[in-house]
Length: 172
Image 1: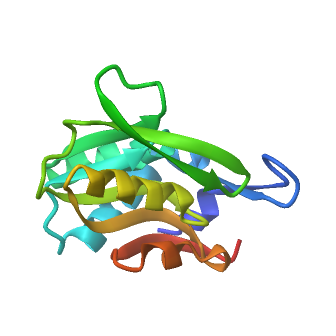
Image 2: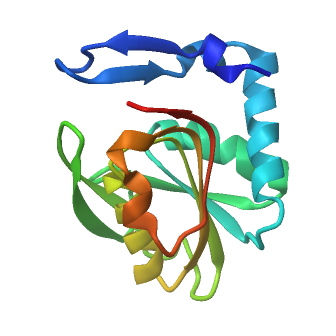
């Protein structure tokens, strides 16, 4: 399947110089969406995964169906202030700003093998923060899976000890 064919690229969004990869066009196509999740499942099948964690919000639409396909649980990593129970939090820089993420303190058990899933690997800020949160809870990050990777932004460099899988790559 040619996933790039159905992903819309929007120049200068959300600000000038950013080339936004709009996956909503892939998500609305059931066959392509299923194909993307199935392809990611194949690429991570060799990993021992107890749970998948995905950062808000597009990490939910990649991570949750991937967790379902693999028969494991899903842990949402949310923006600060959005989770109702006790949390740990960490701040990070985005490619176009700053933000912080939080996870419930009981979401990941010590020693659990965690795959982090998201739609896009850009600078690595969001995902390295997710890795940090998982590790603070005692989880073992066994990999990170992405629909898209922006290679020139070198996000992989922030994930040197994590196996990275991506279906598609763009320069930027």
